[in-house]
Picture: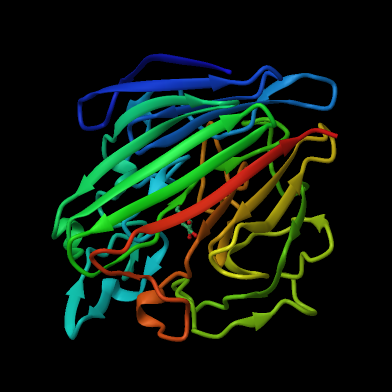
Length: 332
Ligand code: BGC
């Protein structure tokens, strides 16, 4: 494994950005920067050994504008949507900033995707990575409690990308951290991902209202377009949270995606209850038009603070939030 550090331009806040590139002996590489703890690059060999960029991203931090697509970013304090930005905790009402029409999305006006994180590279055994840390002040975007968060991104010799998010708060608060990478296994910029083959280990999904807020029900995928229990082409647009089979809190296989031409495949494992399947419906223009990448955002359920029937998302002082996800790359 090699790990390399280099300048990555200037952040939209005017600070100097840094990029770390980690590469294993098979040529698989991961590029991550301190602006937004963002995955800016993954290069993967295809079945013939040809390397291609499979992450939608840019070569300079200045291009990562805070609310434009969240390309590759670490999202928080609460990823995905909260209806009208409202929730109650300990008998108190909170009003978050609404940055997605009437709703709060991916942490608000200036989420964790738009902050410079502290970075500490490391190597242990056959795995190298970078631990990014951030202190999110009490009251930031109107969330209660100072939240100290870390995002550990690492690559190993077996072709696995580990994503570990942890945090502690000094007051009760709500947490949902994810990564928002867009993938195109045929190569970034090569066109639509709707022909990629998808398998989702989910018997249910969360139906949503017209502003993409879950209704609270869990629908069976049986007989619907959401049934990817057997592999089939993506074919149409999605922007929905899939309810992953198996036990919450336990790392288990969640989603498999393959590009039929190059043979490149990724398999996502997560310990979270859901994965937001998003087909880049709101991407536009060059270099990344609509549907030119797909996101698999492992996470707790959207708007969970307003749905007591969903798995809980409140973090108490003294507890540690810990989300583990992992992506395995292959090219058979
Ligand atoms: C959401 C989309 C949203 C996008 C923003 C996704 O996580 O599901 O609805 O437009 O993030 O890039």
